[in-house]
Image (cartoon, rainbow, N blue to C red; front, side):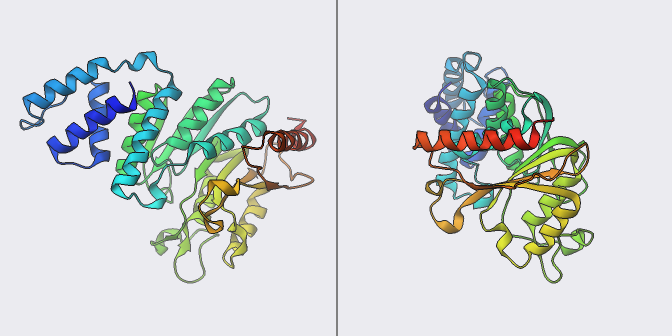
Length: 331
């Protein structure tokens, strides 16, 4: 399977069924998983299109591709969908480079704990979650259970199909992540946090990070919610605005974190990954109280160097390794 093949089937289905590019991707993915056979309903797609689709499906050898190769094909599909359908920013997938950096940090934090459970509380299309799963599997980590939560059924369908096509074992739940979740507690929670306000004030009246007046920041609420679904001593690793703690509303978030977890680090992602200083993101690292966890002697603060500067990046890795050794060497 390659991008040109799957894109051709999407184009055929998009025109034949008069649906969006993303819905056509969902349709063709279901066809691929259903014995590589085009599904027909109410005479559509027509016989000519069905014949053409099935011919293309037969050429698509999923079994010969690694999970990561499949993910990269799906990523190209989602990039085209983003351009074609003007997907809102909070629904756009997390870029590969950022996903690899999150996986890199997570591997350092987990150290010798090679098996653990993982929850993506804002899974979206699943690109961040599957990037991490594939990368950590390559590096001999085992995710014993992987969960994902999202309130957008289209995004969740894409995440589910992506997981199936990559032969990954994901448990996905269609929920508002602010509600009581049906997932079990995990050792790690990740999230590329959406930025903005949560509109349903009555649902968050019990949240410590809610706004005193008006709507609350959804990214604050999600950090609080995620801590509820962490095992004691578990890590929360989030993609957040670099200026997360610079707002007046952040005071409540800081108090909540101090009372329930340890703020262990915040690393600014390379500036060249973002179109403007205002859109820059950082990796926030917190650790839930309990299970012998403690506040690190020195919070990890700094900037990822440009990935193009190999020497600077290697120096950064040495600094990170030293920080891990000093603060987590008794795990």
